[in-house]
Image 1 (cartoon, rainbow, N blue to C red):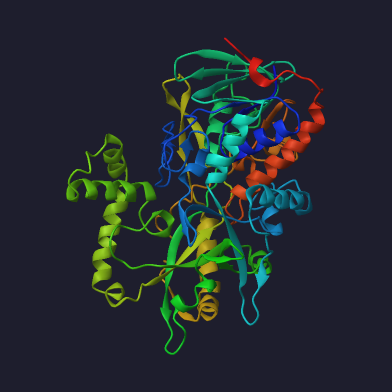
Image 2: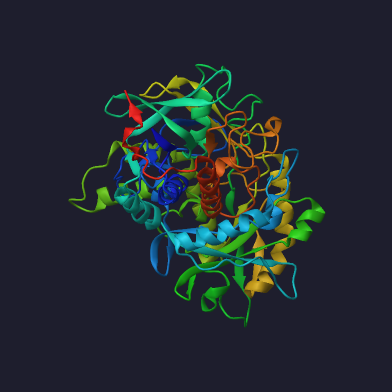
Length: 532
C-alpha cells in the first residue's frame, strides 16, 4: 500500500510526488494521459461547453506535464514559457457573498519563495505604486514548460519511492458511509484493465474540471457525490477573462513604444524573462468595490494569420489548425489535414468569422494607417458565482464515467468592474507608456472574452464545511484522508496567473502530509498499492 496516491501529473501532482518522495514517502501517481505525450499535449475531451464561448478541450492537456504542455508564451529566450506571479495580499479577501481565503498571506509567503526556488525563477516583487499617477506596476516572471514536461518527470522516473501509472484514470472515490474515510479508488487503464487503488492518503490533482467531475461521479455511496454535502462541488468556476480593450497611439515627439520595450514587453533582466503590467491600486479597488484587472500592451500588425487566443481574437488551437490548413494547401508534400484539424476549425468558425468582419472594418479605418500597432490587453478577476459551474451530463466517456458540462458565466459585477477599471486606467496608462491610450471597450464590457486556461474554483477552500469543499489544509470536509491540490481550491482568483500559487499550495500540503503520515524507515516502495 502506498502512503499517498496522487491523481494527475500536472504541475500540482508532479510537485507533490517529487517532494513527498524526497521526504521518504511512497507515492503512486495516476495519470489519465500518456507518459510521453506529443508536443502540444493531448486534448481532454471529457467536457461539453454550455456557457460562454469556450473550448474545454483546447485549454488543458492529458499526459505527464498536464496543462504545462500547452504553455507557449514567447520570450527573448524562446517560446514555451508561462507568466507567473504571486497573488496580492488583498487578493485573498472575500469577493461577493462567498468566503475569502481562510489563510493569511503570511502563511503563503514562505511557500511562494520555495516555489520560485523549485522552478528556478527570479525573486518576486510586490506591486509598486508609480509616482505621479493612479497606477501600480506588477512584475510577472516566467518559467519554461520543461520544468514540468521534462525535469520533474525525469526525477520521478528515477525515484525509487514513486510509481507513475500513465494512461490510467481514477473513475470513482470509494468512501466508508459511516466515517467518510476513503477506502480506495476505482481506476481503469486505456488498455481496459480495472484496478482498485489503496493508499493511506489520496490527493486529487487533476484540475478544476476533472477534480469536480470525479467527486460528483463518485455516487455509489453518497448520492450527491463525495465532498458535496452542501452542494459546492463544481460550483464557483472562475477564469480570468482576457480581451483587448484599447489601442496605444504614439504621441508626437515622444519615444516610440518600440524603443522602450522594458515598459511593456517581455524582456530579459539578470538572465530571467519578465514583463511589467499595470493596474488600478488596491486601495482604489477596495474603495469602489471593484475587482482587479491588469493591463499590458502587445504589438499588433493586423496582418497575416489571426491573432493568438487572449492576445488576439481567435483561440490558439484554432490558429494552429488554420495555419496547418494553409500549409497543406500551399506547401507541396506537407501532408494531409487531420480530422482533429478539421474539428478545431469547425469549433472555431464563430471566432474566425468575427475576426474576418473586424479585419474588413479595420482595413477602412485605423488599422490601415497603422494606428492599431499597439493594443491594450486586459486580464481581469472574476467574481465567484454558484451559477458558473461544472456539472455532470447524461453521457459517459469510454471508461463509463459521466461526462462533464462546463457552464462558464460572468456576473453583472464582472462586467461593470471591467468597464470602471478601464475608465480609471486609460489616461494614466497612456502617461506611463508615453502614448495616448484610446479605449475601445463598450459600455457592457467585452462581448466575447477569451479564457486564459486558468481554471479555478469548483472545490473551493473554506473554514466551514457549509461554505466550501476543502478546509484550509486542502482536506475535503468530512473525509480525513482525501485532499485536493491545484487551483480548484481557490475561493477567489485575483488577477495573477495561478500556477505559482498552485505550486505553493502543493508545497504546503506536502508539509501537512509528511507531518501526519510520519514515515517509518524501511517502508516498502509504492509498487504494491494497486490490485485488480
